[in-house]
Length: 521
Image (cartoon, rainbow, N blue to C red; front, top):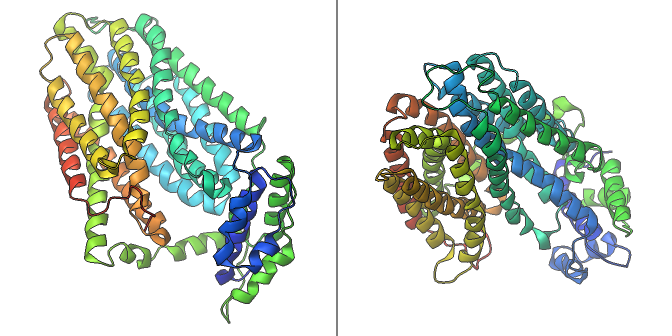
């Protein structure tokens, strides 16, 4: 019998504790009933007695979830890298349409998979997102014209757009509370993905691409980007098989309980414990006992997909949104952080998505815009992102700087270096400014992803994250539109992007909350 709605949260708390115990090393049996007797006041006590190490199974989960983080940055970077050769071969009237198609797919993917994983299950979505990316990425290599590559970019981006919503949900729902810092560590996969993409692009696109100065560019002269798509699609397919064949992902117990499949939820907890060499005493009776905590008159949840859709639609109300504006200070904070995400959502892709194109065209003006140098420089720029992520993680814990200081400083400096890039008189100086830009922007993103959820109240954090992410994606769609009308061959898009970063940094300075060293709201 499915649990009443008001019992679900309490029951999930005990199941979360059971998962934590199942994943963390311990030699004794895990007693949920014993912990439950002490209620909330002692739920952390038995958890703290568990051995504080990550087992091999959780390490595997960390790796396969990292695939999603890597894919989330790999494919937008790939689009920016293939834009110059595609423009030379197909000669579209408006090349930024390719980036527009990608951003539309990312928005659709984020919305569809965000709701879909609550309806069809995390496990299905976890594998499907990366499979879709791989299939359409490989198919894109055979594109006969610009319209076709645009369609494929939109389709593979629908898969890419679901990676972070689905993978972060899975990771957090299986992750012991004492190790939630690992979610922040996953951001290193972003920087590594950019390095990998540019490392592959350098020989393929550098040697097998038409030159910027060529008046005629045929398919046979321009095969580099097609080989590049085959490599990236093959890597995505290998990651899919790594997830689907070599790693067993169990459905989230929280999702199973939400659909009324309590017996399956208990089975998952026991299986996770078994794989980690432990035992769990969680039983169906333990979950049923939580019925006593339900309010009178509650009704069981039905388990079919239609009921799941209805429950998710019921969640779309204004209560959580209103809570984010409940006090003047909280309303001020919510408004400002949403504006920060929106401005960065427009500023970052406005420059970053067209960076190889800008390097190639300006390099041609400098007399050294060869494709080889363009992609070599892209690799150098990408490498600078790795120390940026690491430095950001260090600075946020410094009392004199904190989250706000680090985020504001990195965001402002990102804009400053963009403005400075317009003063470059040769390719070497342009490369230097772009390296500085990428270094600071990686610090910015590393802090932004950790600071944002910390300043939202716990019970409304999902809504707050959804608002900021939606603002980011919607403004991201505007980036290629602005680029088309501002003319990529001028400095106008760079000035617009730089101004948006400067404005974002100033907004961060007036945010009311500093979350360093404090518990989240």
